[in-house]
Amino acid sequence: MYKIIEKKVLNKDIDIMKIEAPLVARNAEPGHFVILRVDKEGERIPLTIADIEGNNVVIIYQKMGYSTQLLGKKEAGDTIEDFVGPLGQKAHIRDKKHVIGVAGGVGSAPMLPQLKAYQEKGVKISLILGARNKDYLILKEEYEAICDNIYLATDDGSEGTKGLVTDVLEPLLKEDDTIDHVIAIGPVIMMKFVTLLAKKYSRSIDVSLNPIMIDGTGMCGNCRVSIGGKTYFGCIDGPDFPGEDVDFDELMSRQSYYKDEEHVCYLRLKQ
Ligand code: NAD
Ligand code: FES
Image 1 (cartoon, protein in one colour):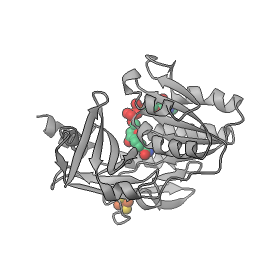
Image 2 (cartoon, rainbow, N blue to C red; image 1 turned 90 degrees about the vertical axis):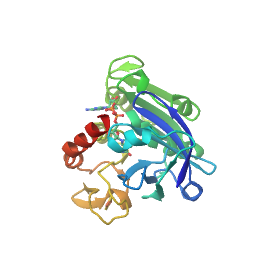
Image 3 (cartoon, rainbow, N blue to C red; image 1 turned 135 degrees about the vertical axis):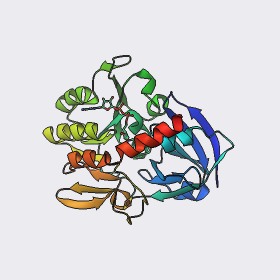
């Protein structure tokens, strides 16, 4: 069993939790993820690690389905059944001079350890944080501590530029030729369009893919992604990959395979 040390509600859909897991904490690197189960019958929830604090692992999750809703009902002092990790490959921390992170919604959680690793190498860091409205712009203070420039974008204009993260990114890539690398983490559609811009302006790009995962150890094949015509497993080859040749359309279609079943479970919890 793993103890919840702290829980904070960031907004009505997103919580941050610190879980005591010394072995995971000791071995985790930026980009690694964990798979947790809330109880014995629980579904496996894959989550990229947002931070490490001593023996504790920080996770941030959006209560969008049955299992994340159940997790959201837990409080500090409660326990969860399993917390397995670190899983996956660590993020590629490349030899670059000025990296721009593009983080959409809850994708700002897995972005944080990567940008911290670049900042520790002395790389200049810019960041575009995008969300549907100002309540969903999370981790602003944490990013202010490590970034040289932060640009905000909201769909409704309640903070920062009114529009998509790509509306902010394009002029920056056009005008600032010191930017030599892009990292995009967020909805697949966002990562697709950020990758198209990176290619248009000849910048390298890394993305963090979130295919459906079950075992997280390369056994079930659910997390298959196509990159440059070859098949990779998100769980053991990723989740981070160079974005240029990712088949984002296939990933979006595979992500919706279990939508109907997920909706039925979600409604059951609401009853
Ligand atoms: P969201 O749907 O609120 O979108 C966040 C931002 O994405 C928006 O502010 C917008 O600027 C941008 N965006 C949306 N559509 C776009 C488009 N067509 N072109 C350019 N930009 C666009 O985000 P959310 O509800 O928080 O969802 C986050 C998603 O990120 C989830 O689907 C989750 O699975 C995924 N995620 C991925 C990882 C990962 O490791 N890859 C980690 C966490 C979350
Ligand atoms: Fe099963 Fe990757 S989650 S093979």
